[in-house]
Length: 98
Image 1: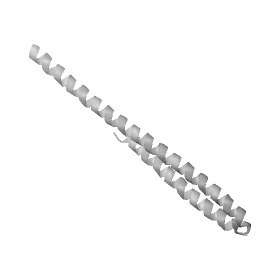
Image 2: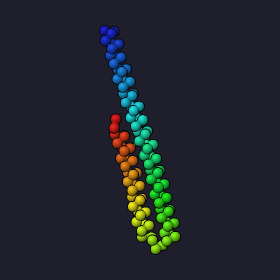
Image 3: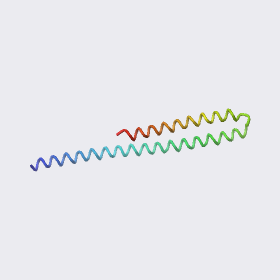
């Protein structure tokens, strides 16, 4: 009877250890996803801000080219926003994968 209780206790300890390892792996995945998403959002914000500032300067220098500059600015901002959206999707995938 004592041996059976010892085996059950050992199995419970093993199950708890595996559960703790799974929680640690999930926590690390969430931490990595959060840091990656934060860096992607910061980079996208800085990039779009720089694009806007440079476009305003370019339009101030050459007002006749404002249409071309505005179009290029919107296209580039959309591409940067797409990269930020892809980072969000990857971060959510890391969160969902266990």
